[in-house]
Length: 394
Image 1 (cartoon, one colour):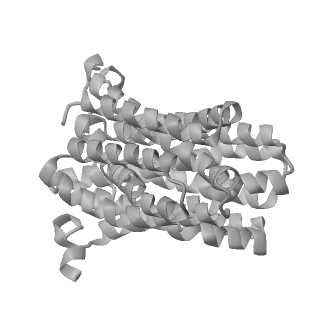
Image 2 (cartoon, rainbow, N blue to C red):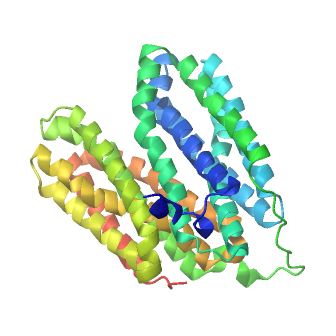
Image 3 (cartoon, rainbow, N blue to C red):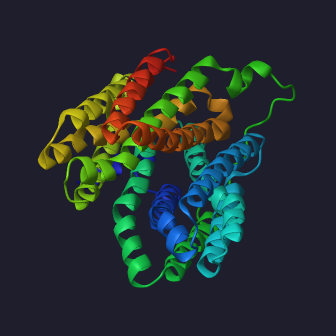
């Protein structure tokens, strides 16, 4: 068991750097799992905002997060120390959630989310970019350790939401947000004392337009594929609880069990994906996972039993586990000289898919039905599969 666990680490041996990277991913995952699932409840009940303003809040936070993180990714590729950028992102998270703990003015919170909270979203891409750069310089393969890093975030989401709702409803949002702020303060200390400061790679004196990530057809197609797959996934996540209760007449707790089951399955899938990617290739494994996602949506459409919905989560776990574990390193393989920007583009493609999924799910469910949302998810999943087939392997 110990030998198998150690095999996931660079050089088959845990060290201060790898442990601090794992700790960072886990704590950022828990901090996000503490705050994001409860955020709509907070804005509605504590702040008193109407549904339209809640939608505006999430849209502004996501869009600003995409823009800020892409700028930070560009800075990191220009030679700004990634350790300092990670430290700044965590400091912004601490400041943002302290404001959330003590303020109940919608517009102040909206500005805080756009400036401070959204900046924290750039932390994880920089952690993965730093990890990949360290591994490349030590000539270690990145697949298994990247999968282990990503699994820490999923583990945080398995543990975080139940605790978050318990604190929010039983103790209060002030204590919840102060706990989240304290996590970011701990992350600041870890970043400062444990993460390595590595010399940046020499910059080219002359700008080469062909080296831009925005001019690379393969990168743009891969990003589009991930927008499709995570748009379909977010449409499912948004619609499933309402579909379960309104159209299938099942208890609302069924949706929570389904999502918890999928998150639990994702973790071993992520760890296995890194190993099998070395044998079969990242593109082939991800393509197979997208097909599993398509089968999952077909199953959701035709299934009528509670047990069936739970069993189908195995396919959903394969879909999310593989694409989340290998997606980052696949993006990085295509443009290793732009590690910061390309890792951030992966993260932003998922966020963009999430925003579009929310919009599409609401429109389709309002005009047709929740089941029709899953048909749309199936179509997007198939489009994602077709798109990723056109991307080169490396």
